[in-house]
Image (tube, rainbow, N blue to C red):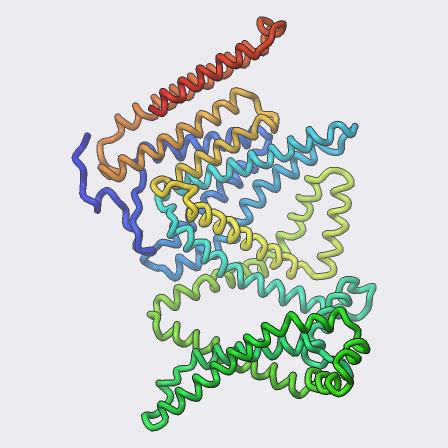
Length: 550
């Protein structure tokens, strides 16, 4: 074996996130990437969806590029903004690849002629969808291995970036949808969904700001009082009391601030304790409650809890105190952070703004072809219903609001996928040494396992299972060599031998499985019980497994 190099050669620095990773050696990287991508492409292509293969590969490329951009040390702000914009294409690629195959299978297998065809065809649709899902995950793991940057720190950083990017298009979409609802309040025929929504929102706001006089409103009053008290406590706690006071008034100001904070916190605690008791107002009618409390007590409670002036005062205190606490907290964060870090922290919102700008620029171009594509992929009555509903939605909200909402949903899908991957890595479900090959192997295994239910032949299924084992073995072995001798060490010969041995063992096992299957279903064993034969095969497999583990 070649001489062990220094740590600087054996690891690759991740300066943007302050960590170190050991990428696999080059030969193992090539094996993982080529075998994973090729197997996933074959499995997805067997479903008759070559477009899904290309879209899944593009999704994996965008995801790997985003991980690479997140950890950039130079030009961090532009790299972060580009990664945020790519979140739109990551979500779009995933939704398009999986959704296209799902729609294609539904269109090909439905409608059914008889009822007994519903279950097997439904299972085939589900299996085909999972095949595309697993193949897409396999490509993500393969291209992430090629980038050599998949780690827990990078995954969490990208998840946070995607969530921050998601906030901007989500807020813009909410404003567009709400403004459309408010603008369409002219009549029930014009906006059939708007009056119930606006009425509900108006009732909620009115219950807090201007309640009906003459009766008690204990629940909403306690909520307002508790919110105001908690906001005051947070504001006083956030204010720099010591810095703002003078030496002569230092003690008095601090004591007063501490007293106000204690009183506010106690008020919030008492209100939280009393709040469950106020629920009696929801189950007892006002006359019964008046009789139980006596008329004078009920009148005092009704006058105080329904007072618009008192409620306006509490609402104003809550808004001012909450705004003060938020402003002081933001100011402290800004003063403790370098300017470059502040710019990088705000850059994801720039990426979200770029998503909105792109949606605004292309909303008149992409919406009609996209809706027509989905309608053409759906069978019969499904296509008619989709066309009718989608046309109604676009006519009501407008193409701009619909496209921005879809863009927000796609970025949100990217955020959900990245968070799921980060959680999987956080709980230790993926090995920290080789997360990329592990994801590629798991995706290939899932795709191959469900391919049989989607109508793929047994040779291709067994080949996919063997490929998943070889991918994981080659990736783990390559990471070990990369950590010991570096990526540029003379490791090609032992790696080729190792991969060839793993491939030979897997191929032998697959051929053995096919032989046993054909023997068990052949004419030799059709007339006798197969239990002894199956038991002997299981015992032999257990012996081989124990030998392999040793």
